[in-house]
Length: 430
Image (cartoon, rainbow, N blue to C red; front, side, top):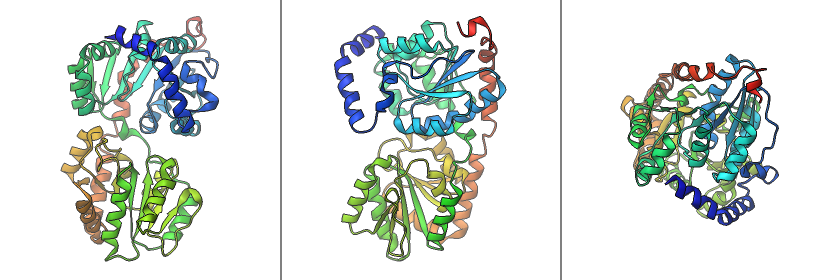
């Protein structure tokens, strides 16, 4: 199966180039650094031991940041190559990566690109985050006798079913991992069933991430604009959900004429199109990217910006987490839980199924099935302060429940880190 996969990725090279060109035209590829997607380095390899950490996009990157900071703090002379695959994650990493770490785009999983990438960077240890199993990248790293460790591994029911249709390929890929650390025992169990030799769970690194930041000046300005207006937030929404949020606003606004609905789409580039759709539906929409302020007549504030979720979690203590009323798997509920929000999500939380089940059981989040149920849940939390504060306290307690997870993950990595070449050794920068 691996041979067939490699042949397919070779034969599909013209199609891959067309696909990447189309992505570049839509702004989804970095034109200035496109060579990195073909395995061409954008920087020289630093001297000394090098850990390669890979995360698919923003969410996975944020989960890995505490681990990156911890390793750099405890291991003098260590360098960390951090790869992602999206323009938005690259922009965020440019701001947040600590000294000693640097960003590159992950190469497309074609063997010649992968080998070019590995020939240049020569990592001493690979940390692979969550659920992106690229066969060539993983197996080629393992073939070079580099330990490859899956960190915070996640296998959703959909991914599990998909990989079971290619058992030979996923077994070969997972054989490339020296150790698989699942987010939860259910993930570790699925990894073992798919063929992982050693899989376990010591906790979910998402619990170790610090609270999302917020610009103090922006927080003060928006707080003044909002005043005492009742408001709720729909965070990280996906196509199909914004019109549902607008319909919920219409239901709630009948009894709350000064209600403000804040929508933060997961992909900010959709902002103008969303605003146009909502305005055609009769809503007064203020678009943040256009610098539009919140007026008394504004009923929906569309925050189509990147990296400001922490700001809006601080401004609205009733929050619906998107990607969950459409069958896409949900978004991370720990982020708003840590910032004092009462949480609601839809039924589609496959990406966080264990976490969502626990939060529902402990009262840390409410699950709703559709628009009508969401309107009722938001109304209850807006109107009943006792219920709202009970939900906020339960969510915060849940978010703090696995504060030890970073220590546990670092302990699992210690045997591999201890065998890395020391800075200055010939083997470290050969």
